[in-house]
Image 1 (cartoon, rainbow, N blue to C red):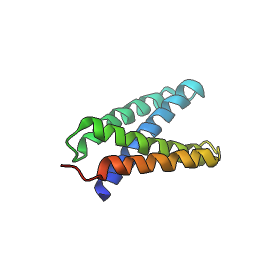
Image 2 (image 1 turned 30 degrees about the vertical axis):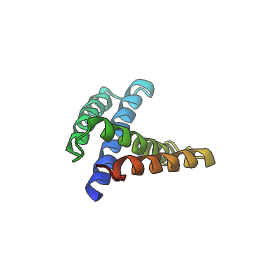
Image 3 (image 1 turned 90 degrees about the vertical axis):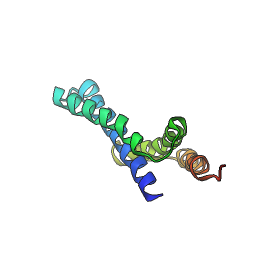
Image 4 (image 1 turned 120 degrees about the vertical axis):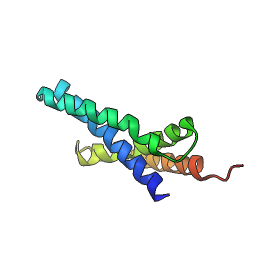
Length: 108
């Protein structure tokens, strides 16, 4: 379970971090190197979920989507300095519950 969570966190940081670097390059007029590094990190993001042990691509990406939402809220809070409100936290908790059900519900 710890490997699964770690890979989801790593993928989320790669996706958000890579996108943020490209955002800085295109929207904040940072040097082109930001965009290049961002693109490389986004390619890495595309590879990381394949390291998951789950056999279903769709289930892994659906569960990852919930983790991404939580990480994006935290990124906005810590990096963009936008404090999440009650509804941000409530939505993140709902996503976490959904991810848990999708990944660890007993199946046959």
